[in-house]
Image: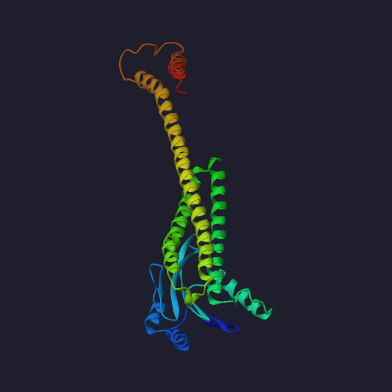
Length: 304
């Protein structure tokens, strides 16, 4: 789907899940080489930036949360930025991009120049908004971590094992999306200012600051969930040990009872106590006494 927006001498064309015919149409309109058109039609595994005579081609991956999988996944966005045009291409619906398109339309209708000063400024605003959206997603991750922490210390360790795994996978996918952005920004700094304008370097520094905020919060989230996982595992292990301890003690306490029961059930001609008046109660008393003695020993040794 092609979505075109224009403000004076600056145009923004957004391609969402485009067909080969749509890509060809837009590439011909802006005189983009076929090699770049081919790049738009297939996924790019790693972020990259290529500088051409009249435009730059930039590929970045941003995390987009998948409600079904309960994790973020890298979503590729291709930017083609010329002197008076910008083209964005993606194969998923990306909320922050739609938000920026609406803002650009309002900016045009209101006669404002905030977004339409130059393509370098428009690209800067788009990428900054994408990072801002990433920070909002990380805020939700932080909220999940806080909820998990609360539940862990409420005795719900077993139920939190899966939730912790979901959050860890989410953070891992997040890192996969943004880990190479710093090297791409370094490559952008080397681009000639004649193409992108003198203010481009200043915009890049701001973007790098936003990227630093994302990386810092991501690092904090990863450390927090790792500590929570270790704590949860320790609590689960302690609970298991307590259960095993209780079962072991019960086995040892009942051992004398079982021994006496087996002893007095032996089929022999002469058994002490058996056959005498009140023999049943005597045997019961001996069993209780043996169990009580074992319990007292455990208590004295502070095993209980």
